[in-house]
Structures are given as C-alpha cells and as structure tokens.
Image (tube, rainbow, N blue to C red):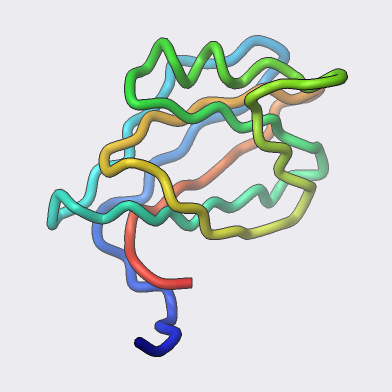
Length: 108
C-alpha cells in the first residue's frame, strides 16, 4: 500500500475555540466510513482540541492540558491529519478566539 495524498470525503466543519469550549461539531463523511481528518489551526493561538464519539466526550476532552490531559494541542498556523472514529465530534479551547477547520477524508 502506498502513501496517498489527503482526499476530502465530506464537508468541512468549523468552530471557534475560546476559553470555554463551544458546542462540538460533528465531521461526517459522504461515504460514512472516513476516519481521517485534516485539522487546520490558522490562528495565532494554541488550541486544545477535544475529540469524542459523542459531543459530551469532545467537550470533556478539550480542557487545557496542564500536566496531563486528553486534549491534543494544535500549534498556531498548523495543519495536521489525525485518525479517529468515523463521525467524530470536535471542539476546543484557546486563550483567545481561534477558528479551527476540520475536513473528513482519507490519506495523509
């Protein structure tokens, strides 16, 4: 199996991370099975990304990491591809309002 460029398989969703996590968004694919997500943080702030199989899990997992935590830090002006369950929920926290974009798909 070769390495494949990221292929979008659904609509991009977005949220604005803030000091309190906003209502989680669900990134669903048109195929129903895409489990990779292109996550972009074009802001100037680190965003602590919370992910879950349900909205409540994503909110709980978005707490700022101090010594240990489930949130994934997204550094400013970065784009990363992650693998999670299909139809995952996303939200996040940041020290200032920061827009995050998430696109379901396949590839790296």
